[in-house]
Length: 124
Image 1: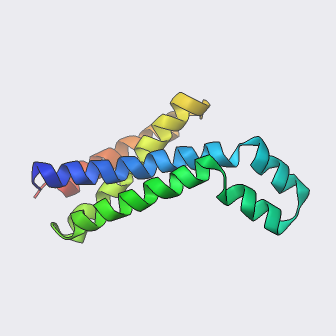
Image 2: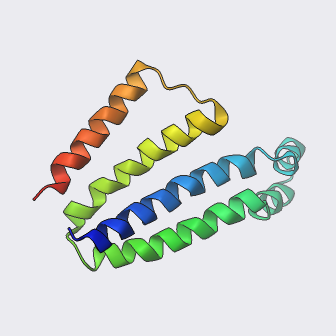
């Protein structure tokens, strides 16, 4: 895998991880919580889809998808797709840093296994 393709892979995966954080922020907003408590499906849908966090997350997913298509046009899908696992790692680390999510021994072990798998599969 060339350095430019690796850069595209990492950028695409990073955008997806940040999108998850924006989704969390959007769904935690007062407007969305109030709409969810109110029970009206239309009001809830509007609150969710007009939330800046959700809109930002969807935008980043869109950009990440376009970049991912560029990756798939350059390398084998079996070589590219395991890197999606980095999204789990990044999301867990960001969740820990921003939201105080728990990173116990089991999750840390899982992260280590994901990283080892990505390393092994990325080698030719």
